[in-house]
Length: 132
Length: 132
DNA sequence: TTTGTTGTGTTATGCTATAACGTGTGCCAT
DNA sequence: ATGGCACACGTTATAGCATAACACAACAAA
Image 1: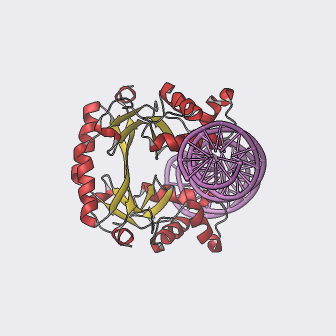
Image 2 (image 1 turned 45 degrees about the vertical axis):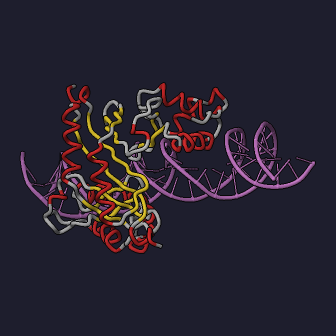
Image 3 (image 1 turned 180 degrees about the horizontal axis):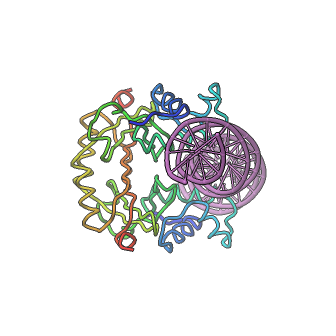
């Protein structure tokens, strides 16, 4: 585990403190007091954090979350991760399903498609918001 | 099957003629000769076409494709659709996997999560580009 | 005819992301 | 030690994606 730089640490901290995913520009605003002035400072930190697997990008939201499994040495670090995103409260559940992962890999192999990154995002209402 | 409006027909036509997904702004440029002047004309048509299931939005690309199964009365019209997107040539394969779909539905049901829309996108290299 | 709905057009604006350039720092091979 | 390199950082400008707000026209239902 490489040491994080100051900016990376600040961005990751902002994401960890947040209940919901944050856009790059929201992160920027949260970190203005720490010297952040430009989007690139955020995007550059995010890029590295994503490479390290500490942060995920939610494609359907153009936003970012801290990985829910940081610290664990669970398989989720290396495989495909899935997300359930509540459209009402914004809460995100990160999970992992070997069956789905293998099924998609099998499809790709069958087509000769070389899989690089897989996005799985379920949008809807979490149990709490669905009840309300 | 409702009749399409002129703008919807133009947008759908542009997508059908394209090998690769198109962004809203690329569609706009392609349709300037037909009187399109503003992004909203495109976005409004896309919104309806997506509702009708004739067009899909690719979240990881912020772009749009014509549904590969238009005309057929295949189950894919109503269920979750998955995409494999080639990072090199931009070609998109649309497919459908009941196992994956059910597996994700089961997960959602187990969590009390009310599924509204599910995104599955595999980014990578198609067989042709992987070979090259 | 009035009213409501839907599609349309236009202008302006906001949000998301990256290009291009320059600076400073630490490392290490010569 | 010093020159060269890699890398994080900072700044300005710009590109690309999406929607708000307002106005008008066509048409169907009451």
